[in-house]
Length: 483
Ligand SMILES: C[S@@+](CC[C@H](N)C(=O)[O-])C[C@H]1O[C@@H](n2cnc3c(N)ncnc32)[C@H](O)[C@@H]1O
Image (tube, rainbow, N blue to C red; front, side, top):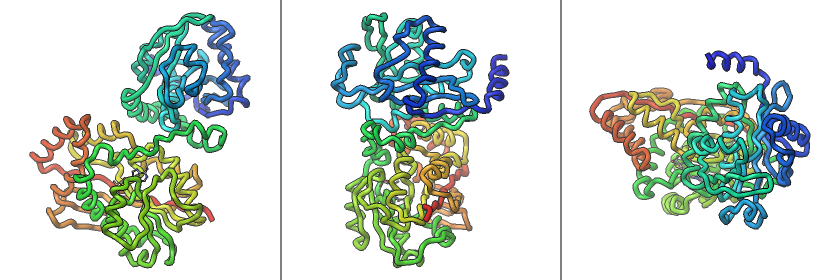
């Protein structure tokens, strides 16, 4: 019964919108929400209405028919901030983040709006802000919410402190626990926003438009998610083999793409050992191109330099590339976007180094297209959930690229399956048939994650005992920067 009521209520909520807002533009509405909920509804004194940190905090608001109905904010404290002493918080190297003043008007509770807002601000801060730990301080009736913050947001009770307005229960969230919650939060945000038919607003975009908030930006984008769980030595041959296979899926596609004629400059981001770029360079359309390759891993770059001497290889990060504005006519990236924690920041930087009318050509696998027996599907699905990057990024890239003024021009999908003869890859149009062993070797890296071992073992057992068919799509998308 509850479900029916909720579904009806949702259908009447068509004009629901979430927005990151400038505090100065919405201060009155935010105070009014706090007054209605905390003071009139829950009996708190007026001290809850305002915080000295409101002006420098992040504020997420929900609107229904353009009227604010819910709000939440994140406050930031530097290591020398008075809050450390006031709340007896552990010392920190970077900023610490307080999630605070979550309010939803009574008529809009039980619709999961407040849950979605909590997840969005938590996930947005986790992805984009450099922090040491998260905390919340619960007072009065809010203290009974502690178990929800523990289960849903990874906080642990830390201690209780006295204050002139009553005791404050302090909960802290940090370390590996946050990583686990993040993986779950990604999925929950998708599910709840689809349920509420609301578009999650981009915190990256908001930060881009507010240079005064630049100091909050995360410096953690140096992490190489792709190489972290892998042994470089084992991964290199797999990667070279994969590059050859994937390249064969792209030959027809390159024929179809409207590429600038030579001489033109092409950059391959996340070039790995350079095998893929060296194969690309053999395509007649690219033969006279000036080629550059960039990778975060110094080992990959040394290997690429060693093997293919004619290209300009550089070590560097897609989030901060060592090239001037408008340097390249074409930017290519294969099997990189799935490994990025902040694809929006990458797109912004790509836009910067592309010339006007330049092309971004992205190739990536999409885990959502995997087909096969349930036990192997379960492994792929679980891996997508626990992986810190975004293994279905190709579903989202066109919308994200649009934010950064890169328009989708063409898209292609090649289905790769295990129905070929071993050692003899065959291709029919946009289908690639690999031998069973070659195909399975492409999934072997999953077993290197301790949290995936049991899923991999079950999938492996099934794969080796049956003649099951499996397939997955390698998708390509071509975007253009305006003139
Ligand atoms: C799966 S490999 C793909 C290599 C090559 N593009 C190919 O298709 O064979 C992913 C590569 O992205 C690189 N990488 C990961 N994060 C990066 C970042 N932030 N900036 C630049 N390269 C990155 C890794 O070091 C790795 O070499």
